[in-house]
Image (cartoon, rainbow, N blue to C red; front, side, top):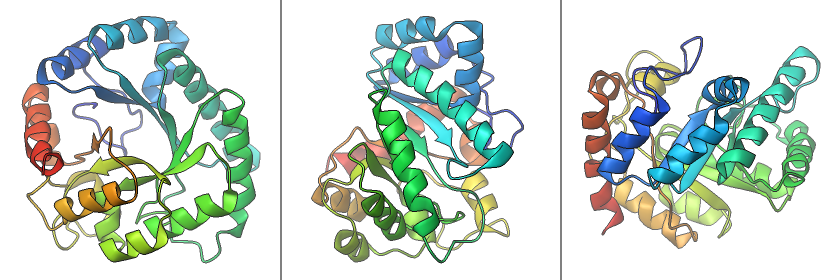
Amino acid sequence: MLGDVTPVDPVWVSPHSHADRIEILAELGWTGMGFTQDELSAARDAGTLKDLRRLLEAGGITHVEVEFLTDWWCDGEAGEASRRTLDVLLDAADELGAAFIKIGTAFQEPIPDLAPLVEPLRRLGETTAQRGHRIVLEPAAVSMVESIPRGSELVTRADVENVGLLVDFWHVLRAGTSTSELLRTVPKGQVWAVEITDADAEPTGGDLFTDTVHNRRYPGDGAVDVAGLVEAMRTLGFDGPWGVEILSDEHRRLPLPEGMRRARDTTLPFLSR
């Protein structure tokens, strides 16, 4: 929950204060909140992570997510930068009691062989386990690991107890993954996080990355089988807390309370069926 900020902005920090956002969430009945590495780095540097935790507790926000780590498989400067980001995320997860740390892979063409990522993911899992934290891997249709079945395969091959899978409904549709394929390829209990969203039947904006950042829809407004995917997630053993991720110009243009209310009101009917 950031407001009018996109993943392509130089710094991914909300124009709204933590206190204002948490107050809005509390008033609307939300119980979870996520924070980006840029926000968390600024809070850690300012020494305000403890203050943020107190705000979350006062607002009844019991589920906290921290993100986003990439380049965890890299050497050189990219690897060093990734390790610095991991330090920020671990410190924030310690202080905020985060449910998990979200990770992903680079935005590029899918790689044909997952083998180069297996050992780095195993090491990353072991490193975070030493601090008592879990990781969720988000496969993304615009990334090296482009589908939920391939992400599941990577998590299975890494075989670390504290590494699970995140399923984002946009990436399910855009990767062309069917519900039956999800149920056939993902082991029960491996899905630890879900992000509900919707999308047009075909990408708009010229490419997948533009589509995922600017053109997502509220649940029920697009071509995603939201009800079917919710039921599939439950069949795989997941039953919340459910995340909602509406990356869209439409959503960002709305006043923050109105946007969060609309996200809540369009999602809840799918969870109560």
